[in-house]
Image (cartoon, rainbow, N blue to C red; front, side):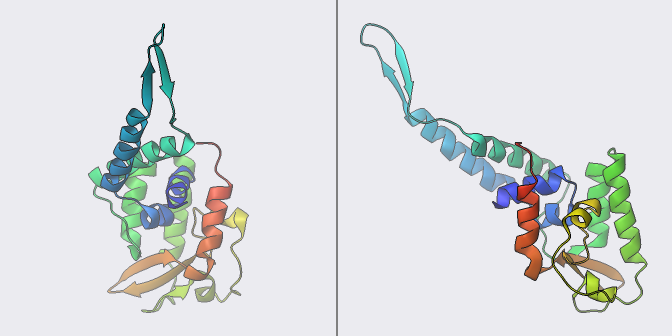
Length: 189
């Protein structure tokens, strides 16, 4: 599921989730190699009168998702990104510039969310749910708002400010719901 959340975060341009669920390309590469070796071990050549190749093991959709996750992780790592739990807003800006800048809809959504957060006056030094900072009632994540606001939905993230830098992280109480929204809305990729 973590791989699907990572892929979905990238697919839906949800930068907080991309950085929070990023997977080490080395770890994924090791899994891919183990599966490939297993595949080779299960190929049987049968030559009773005619040459027949029997495969008792096949690649499925999960394998292709591993390959996609490897490619995305490797690119992100080459660009200097790594998995983060406490994410500086400036790191989200960097991700947007490196990955989403040529996607105008996604780029503009992320810019708008960053702008709104930068202009909040009452962010404290301790993490608070975004909705609390806005004096709104805390509730479950609204699906439409979650995707429309690039994952910056007010009940999905927490914010704090330290040394003039705003930090963002996923709100743990609604984390499972966010994961379900991402996975549940993925097309067959």
